[in-house]
Length: 582
Image (cartoon, rainbow, N blue to C red; front, side, top):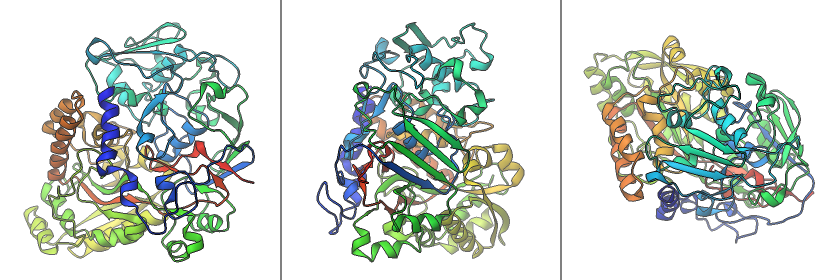
């Protein structure tokens, strides 16, 4: 535990934190409005309760079910308003926001048995929205639920991999135990105690218990695949109504006791989220102060950027943090001709990263050119790790043509490029298409619905193969702020799944897997980062991933918002700290 937390704090202190890239003469002092003020401090601090927080987003949620959701904005929303877990990231600006603190648990435990056993005690007085006490069995049931992959079709699978240990536990819906408590690696000796026993030490285990997938769930209220319609709240708000794909309304949960919860401010009386708003309309509503925040937090559209950056009065209500995300193209190792490494290398050399950066908003609003698959916010990153010499951002046409000849396609070939159908990503995909056409690679764009894109479009290898997706637009942020939390799920061949897959390239390299095993057992942060640096180099050499920007996002915040700051854990505004002045 100590090693994992220390690593997370150290990576920010060593120059990886969001604040390190955002100095600006327009920045206001701590506690005041100003450009990038929310990156380094708290804007408009206040404890005033009341009012309605108005949020919006273009996409439908990937899910409001905590065991399925996997978008950063959904995790931020859940953990802020209706989901509590054993541990939480601290709700503070800067590196302090990476620290794990107790949430439902009384303390952050120290592992025993050589780092394999973790024992938690629950706080007294924590309840679900119906007044039922939250017990250790509810926590175990929620974790067991994620094993039921026929129902829980997406979401991170770390706990499945760590806790199954050869039992082949089928999940709660097929559990033959009368109380549905059959997972042997998790024990509940009494209602306030839960014990996790790992097969071998895993330095980052405590981060698994911060994720929404570990949220408690009362067995009697589990509605299976329909649970997203009304998850049972353990947090300060509960569902009043949910019109799927249109609007979510949250109201105060009168069974939530603030004395048990130092993490959430819970200032507004209501929280309303409108889904499906056109991206250009979101920008218009933001600048008219009709809504408070775009919860996607992926930035305003290119046409809106000059309206913010060139107007001092508007600019002071905007922030452009380093988000911790990488924007990249996944290149399938299973879809011909990309099963040939030279065809993959041709793409690495052909792509015009500067054009792609411009499509995302340029340096200020889109991010810096990426050279490898570890972002600056994660230990082990080194900008000099640049196998294909892409730092300049310019295409290398001659090298691309050499690789095409080496893969037996000197005149190029046809392929399909999958992308979400949203503004900046679609424009970036068009830039990919144009730059590849210069070397004879003809990529047909296949825009897809954003809500399903990662889960069942490119997250299903069978679908990728049948649709011929040689290339896939993607973005990724750390599940938790260590190298394993960022990179493992993308490159570990043992984590390739039939659905909810995140190793989109289907990269399979035994040497990478062996190094991952070394890294995940190594508690020393410096040694751990060194192993991940080796892994990152091997990933680059595979040519299966083509990173193009280390993400920044220019977002606007309504002047009436209070307690605004960027939480480094999500690379977004911390939704649960927000209040409104009117």
